[in-house]
Length: 292
Figure 1 (cartoon, helix red, strand yellow):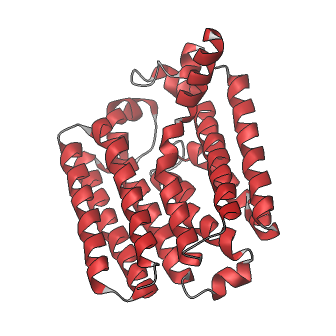
Figure 2 (cartoon, rainbow, N blue to C red):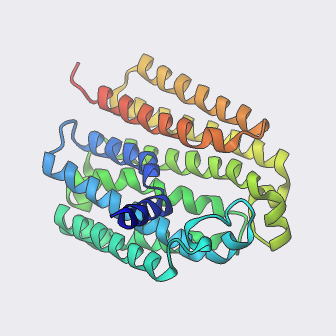
C-alpha cells in the first residue's frame, strides 16, 4: 500500500496535477461566455477532458525533456531523471491522458472530437520548440490558450454555432489573453535556467536578447494581453466599471510578478499568482454573464 501511494504521488508530481488550476478557469470562462448556466453534463465532461489533456501534455513535456532535465541542476531530481517514474510509465500516462481527453471530447459533440487533434498536436510539438526557436514561449501559451475556445465549443457543439454566437469574439480574446499571459510568464520562468540554457544550446527570449530585454517583453506582452481581454469583456457586456476592475486586478498581479522576477523569486510567484489570474478571469466572466 505504501509503495502504491508513493507511486501515485510520483505520478501526480510528474504531471503537476495542481497546474490544472491555470487552464481550467479559462476553459470554464469560455463555457460561461457560451452559456451562463452550462449543462452539468457538459461541465463534467470538460473537467474530464481538461484533466486528460493536462496529464498528456505534462507527461509528454517531461518525456521529451528527460535528457535535459537530467543535466540541469535545478531539475535533475525530477521523477524521470531519478528513476522514480520510468520513461515507459511516462508514455503510458501520456497515452491514457490523450485517450481520456479524446473520449470526453467526442462525448461533448462530434465537432469537439474532430477538432481535438489540434490541441493534442500542440501538446506534442511545444516541448521541442526550445530546441529550435526563441519563440518557444508562444508554444506553451497556445497549449493553454486553446482552453477557452474548447470550453466555448463544448457548449455550442458545432463550429458554425460557435462562430455565430454573439460572444464568440469575447471567447477569442480570452484565448489571446491566455497566450500572452502564459507565454510571458514562461519568459520569466526561463530566467531560472539562463546559464544552463546558454551552455546547452536551449533557445529562449532571455538567452537570445538577455534578461533585461526579456523582462520588458514580458511586461509589454502582459499589457497587450490585458488590453485584449478588456476589449472582449466590454464586447460581452458593455459594462465599464467591471472591466476597469478586471484591468486593475490583472495589472496588480502582473506588477507583483514582475517585481518578484526582478528579485529572483520566480518560483515563489509561479503557482500562487497565476492561480489568482485564472480565478480572477473566471470570476469576472461568471458575474459578467449573470442577468442584471
